[in-house]
Length: 530
Image (cartoon, rainbow, N blue to C red; front, side, top):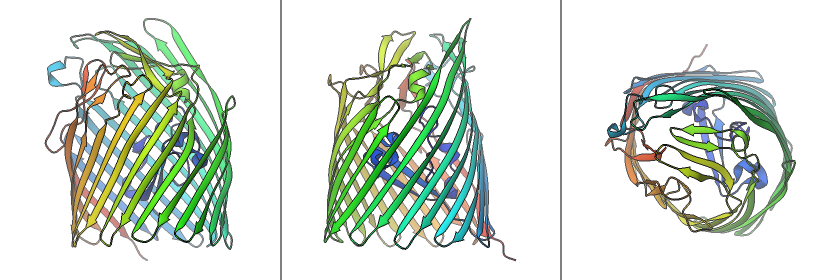
């Protein structure tokens, strides 16, 4: 969600992260574990909430960065307060040649770098009628073009959204109303590549228009020992996938989804014990779901024990129901007969809060029924064909640990996740490493920030049959920022410092991740006064 408004693509459910300018965000909040009792079916395993920086009087921002692979990025922003009104706008543009996604020993004349260029912008007007009452209207847009690693395969996206958010605070309670409309247009070209990768031919041109309209109302009651949130929401999505086939033919699939739900969530505090409970009644038109959740915490300022049990669900997207796509010589078919998937999970954890550090450990178990996954129908050196289907069930169990500690000028952070995810036939879930972790060390002093980190992943399996293996890997990265004046700073970022080559997919040709990438530039942020 972005300022309370759903940010998922209306047709596919994915998120275009290029929509968000990092410097324009004030904070991000992550809710781990099912959050469908409040946020609906897209929050099957959690939710991410992004919040824009509040407007300030005559505040200007600007930046320019350049890097290898012919990378250039420019950004600008402005905000102002005037009586009961606030205005803000941000824009960002990036272009890069990108990098080869096929290893050198496999490349042919058809292979080209996978690059991207995009422009994203947003504008927001706030009416601050009183300290307790406020309304904002917001518009945002994205235009993006991508080259996907061969001479003929490209895709482009045009997206625009309008949203409104009203909040009224009373003496102890509050009311929130929101509404949004989003339209998107996706274009793609698909091809097949010869085994020697020296020739390529187009198989189809695809056009996918889609739109989404939704709204929600929430009322929050805040009391001394308990709080309650009640509300309802709806969303209508319409989309179509139209393919022009080569050498001849047309394939069309699409439809309309209308979902609505009502929810309630409450918490009660009794000394060191806090109890939580919630439920959502949700309808997808053909299916009705009840999603209850409950939990507890117990502890003091230094430590806390916690537990939760939940049930959640996710309806298939129009993309999964109706759109066929290819990645190289791997084709994935849609399935108009898909059913929603549902999950039942439980978590148990403990947190320790010290004066300078924190430790958090969580054990979890999640069982997904009718899980939607890509099932292999055919696998040959020339073609892999899969279809989205409802597998019987899958079970994921594991432990997550997070640790942080601060010294005078240093801060260390480490995280680790063990997740053993398997289908009912004991085969492992695709693209889920059993072990993954990250660590970061940050030094801050007198206008200088230096940060370096390591990310590591163990072996993954590419497909449902566990045939294609993706070996484990680790990469190093670093960022630096130096304040040159009160308004001007210099920045540097380097990814994959050791320039390691690692496999991220098979189609069935191995696909590799990003090589060493760096960018550097200047950022300006300040205020103009009369």
